[in-house]
Length: 456
Image (cartoon, rainbow, N blue to C red; front, side, top):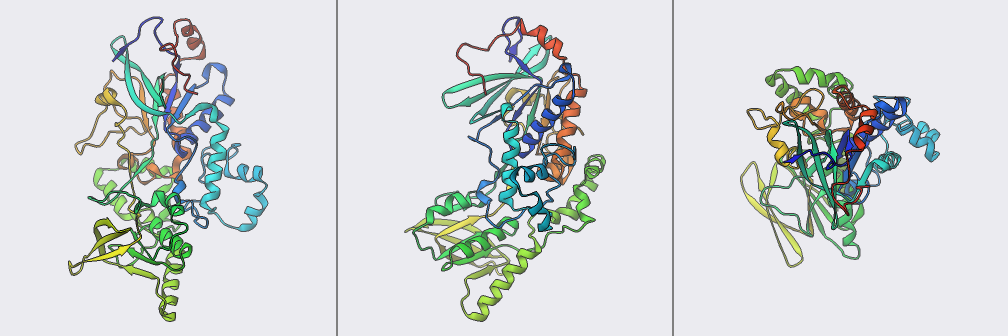
């Protein structure tokens, strides 16, 4: 634990963000707009660290015909500030496609187009981020017996940088999940690696793929591989009788409204569980009905023509994989009979979902000041700030990993624009030091150590 000493402190940021995916890009945009409209004394200083070399969001799933499952109006800023210069519509205007998009009469852009929008937005605030920097430690800094700041150390190659902050915003995204006992290899992929891995099959003649999973990504993988490899058999394995359609009806979509976060947060635990049970089919292990119909139509057509390349192995579960002789053997268990059978393939694709990163994983000793509930989950305030001991004055905010407290929108785009505005309001409202105070403190600060990089 560091003790603040005169003349031995780095420059202090009001906010440091860990990760620079869509959520923290939205945070940076909100900060930029805030700083543009307030006086110098109210400016919020911030910096973000991102371990990727540049911006990227699920690049492995940017299939050419895949569309977003969320309206373009739920971009990084519109629900918070419809007049923002960072909206999806302003992006379209800058690309010369606004009229064409309007004529398309579609709320749901191609995923590759929305990714391009995210890159465009991230570039607008790239002065706030250090790419290629992995945060390796967060250390408490004590002043007058309380943790007033944290020192964030990030590594890029052999270089390390240390930045000090009054607040942290953690937006480290999701981690791929694979079945227990199964490891990712050159022939066993998670769907997040699909496009990066599939190019390595060029020049080969694969005969069979197995895709495990029942959600949107699984169905998209099946359709893509079926189209990309016209001689290969595509076997879909899932525990249901078939893909379940996503409920995107108007009333059900209210679960994603900003007001729904307030209602969920204040609801008793048993009501929270009921709400998740009622409305899980808006997001989890469900597929757009148009894609379901397309796959069924294709499978039926192949059955009529006697050339069945689409196989649906339903009410079944993958129980093991074994590689050898340039193939991978998948063991599949029928949930009805309990029988197991082996199926050889060139590749097994695991479209088995994601889980939030451990929110306290990077915090080290600081995490000891953060409270958990009786189930071991972090306690989170309505403003997305971790509940902590009184002696931790530095605010720790989460973007993701708050589903148990704030509902289904925890890691989704639907409420991102509103969420970052609420976090910013909280940070400002908790008493940021004025720019004049910061200026007076500059005389007592210096870089942490000679040769330490700027973190740019």
